[in-house]
Image 1 (cartoon, one colour):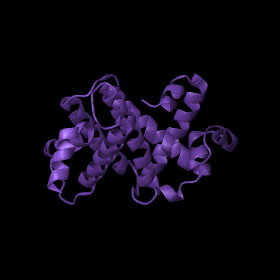
Image 2: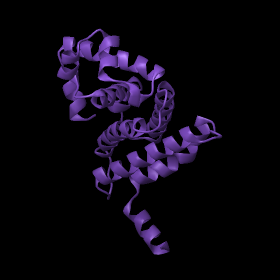
Image 3: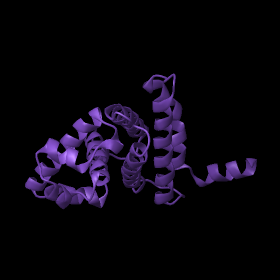
Image 4: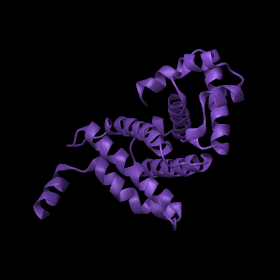
Length: 202
């Protein structure tokens, strides 16, 4: 995973406890109020922490939200040990499931998930998906630079997961996973022969 997450592992336990209190208070408020209407004062009062302490940890509520999403998505990845795995279709399938379920759950937690909520979540989740893909691709052979393939695949998997989440008639997740698996996989492992074939048809 990214170096920023490695650094977070080494943070003093007291700092972690304070951040968890703020994160918990913020999560509770997201169930009750629109994201835009939540203030730093609301968060600190709910957490029982003063404003000076809040600003010692986060610059504003947006930074707290990014931290919350980063920590929660990271926990889902680690729970399935995907960060310690290598590339395989089974692991890619598991990651697609994680992303879809995480987006569905995160959207359900917020009283008003649209607006600025989704772009903030998107940036954090896509960054971690890309980091994971980079780790996987460094263990495989490919004619496409790992960063380009990881970026394409992370945008693909996130966009498709959002499409599934917002669908009026949402198909079963297991069916959707199998449907999009080849699409995401193609972004990761497209080789030179496939590129030439595509260009020849253009």
